[in-house]
Amino acid sequence: MSTDGTRVGGGSGSSSAEEPWPVRVVSQKVGAWIAKLGWVWVDGQVAQISRRPGASTVFLTLRDPSADLSLTVTTNRDVLDAGAPELREGARVVLHAKPEFYAARGTLSLRADEIRQVGLGELLARLEKLKKLLAAEGLFDRARKRRLPFLPGRIGLITGRASAAERDVLTNARRRWPAVEFRTVNVAVQGPSAVPQIIDALKVLDADPTIEVIIIARGGGGIEDLLPFSDEALCRAVFGCRTPVVSAIGHETDAPLIDYVADLRASTPTDAAKRVVPDLSEEVRLIGQARHRLQRAVRHLVDRESHRLDGLRSRPVLARPQVMVEQRATELTALRQRAGRCLEHRLASAEDELRHTLARLRALSPAATLDRGYAIVQRADGHVVRAAAEVGKGDPLRVRLAEGELAATVDG
Image 1 (cartoon, helix red, strand yellow):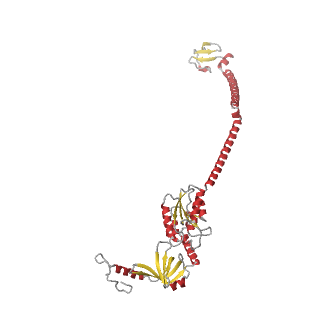
Image 2: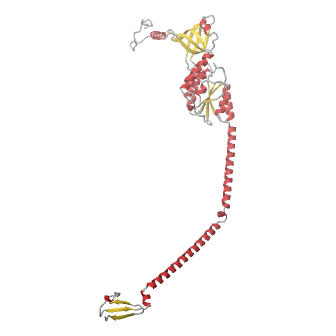
């Protein structure tokens, strides 16, 4: 059906293998659906302007800076002169247009009735808005930025063909480290095709396992010239790279959005070469200094330990080791003498005690009593008689004297 509800062409409501639509019907239906879109505002970059002398119609090729896609725009010369009289190729425009599908040729174009060239202030405002959006999403987060390798084995370089930026990076890098290797991919660094080419080059280098760091370099230029390096699609492509990316765009004062997304921002292409590749002569000098410090430390350690050994050797225990033996021998002799004295003293004390005990024993001994003239009277069973009542008349008795014994019988 067309936009007014009538059936388009001679086809039926739906197609099938038995009832296919003719090409004209398909073309008419596509045109009808496109016509439903109506008038829209479109933002793009002018890739080509075609003004035919004497013709009132101007043809523009409008390109999306982030994709390899373009559309033809037709407009009246008066519309172009009223909205953008100084329009040049590469400029950004916003236009009010209606999509139109030409069934006869099967092509899509835009018919514009108003064109506005985007000014510098508006461009900067758009970039600032995009910057805040990317920052909010974490694309500028320092925590995710990777450290560059100390000495990359191979470096990927994305830059313009035979450009000063390419020469600066290669010359300075090889001057600092002659053995450094590069894989250079030349791309457009401004204009409508810059962003797609740079993104494709990024994909190629990021997929190369030998590439350890990627440099995107471009010389200085105006804000419009550096716009591709603030493109949202390019920023997201840099953010998604597995390989560390160094941004070296323009001069130190230039700050495209890719600088905030890259793992390292270099102020110039020359600075990028210095930041990525170490200086061989400087590294040799640093190694020499390190070796000198190491030698000094070793010498200092050896001298300190040597003095310590000398101090230990000068001690009496090592200078005259027999002194320790002599001291121990003297101590041992003194201990033996003291032990001997203690033993003699104890023996003398024991002897005196034994003598005193013997004297007491003798004083208390019955033999001593017998020696003084006393005698011990015992019955036949050995019982000592202490009272006369303990024996009777006729009992035999033994009388022990100091010397010898007597046998006796009780008479009464």
